[in-house]
Length: 110
Image (cartoon, rainbow, N blue to C red; front, side, top):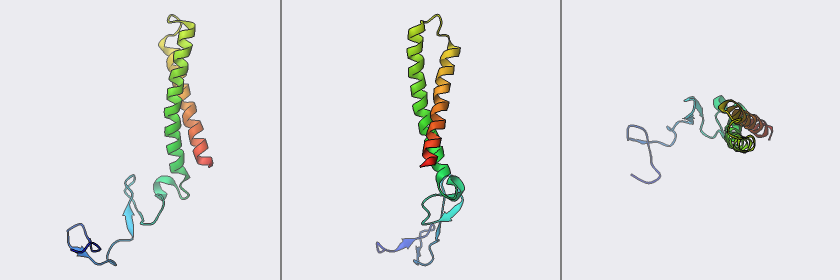
């Protein structure tokens, strides 16, 4: 087989015009154009939905870390008797949600 010759899934060589012009999105398994920069079903027509999802995830991770750091600082200031699991968990969750919102808004805007 020559290096430029392509094969189909059954192993037989295929003509260059017989190859499909679409690919399957690994996220939603819909057929999309081969040269599309993003999947219109997953990321929206302009790609901003996917950017917002990625921004929300990354912002949530950083918000979770920041909230945990803030909870650790707060619990060391007030002492272990006042730092029960309720306020500490609230601080961490508030940090994660804030990070998700900020990350999604910043990614979607630009």
